[in-house]
Image (cartoon, helix red, strand yellow):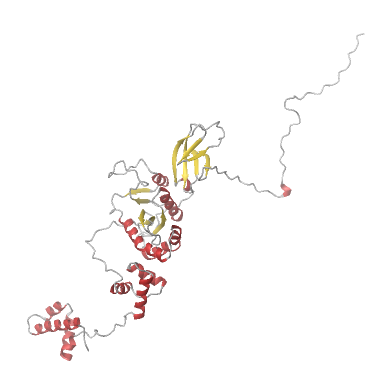
Length: 431
């Protein structure tokens, strides 16, 4: 039987060490230490050499197929799947998908070695020195990370870039929201926060970068202003959510790692799903990807109690909005973002000209005008008034209906009612 060169070389090394131990150059314990085996293993090798000679030092496992060796047909199927359907996926992402959708039962390390052996997957470079990360929060909802990533997410739409707004939990690494937008705008950020709050509740804090929608920075490089709040900052202040700024990319490492993970996984999944538009991509995100992502990358928090607070009677449409103070013109018109809003006549006011009012643009592109607690009007996206719905009274049974009597005037309002004159007795003659 022909043995591999490595097995023969190892046998020669063992023989040389054992011969020196027999010549009393060093002890058998030292020989076992040199060979990197236990003294018991060295005694077994000595017994095999005395019984079978030099051939007994060769590892008999060489040349014999392993009982755990993967079948050739299964290896070819895995390579074919990667080449034809999942080209460009990283090793772990590909392994998770083929286990879920194609019934592959091999371990992750085995699949990775198959792909690396075929030259389809690059070997990872060695990591740098160990760094200590910030400890995660203990409770689910204690801190959320919100970030936007501009990237060519739709590989089927060449030459286009979209912005992915993602919200992740710090304690569990759970992806709570992900959607593609045209840009990282106030509308996109508020929509993301509103959807998270409706589904989970009000979080304790939010961690973001210092983008223009998030904070006002009086001077570049200095700390953000805590008094002059942006539109998003005002909404978070009304809800009691602490807004924490990040002053470096390293500080928001979890958001950056989440973006890299999504860029590595989501682009390939959207391509495999045939998503060429933002509508199809967002539908795939809601219906499939977020659930699958959390199945593999979610983790249990240290404290099982949730830090989310129930929303209660809060009207989020009046909180997540863009508002501005305007002065009503002489024609009772105010404008916002080029849209003219005509104020109708208000009860008890001959005119609204000169009043300072608050104009709000809501997430559904509608407008509302307020002065304190009084609502002067609601308008659609084109500035047309929206008539309030009047409650319809339920009609009772026919037999119980009562007729409504209206006061009627039988005489002309300009005439006065005259008392009827009694007939007078004729005057009597004096005797």
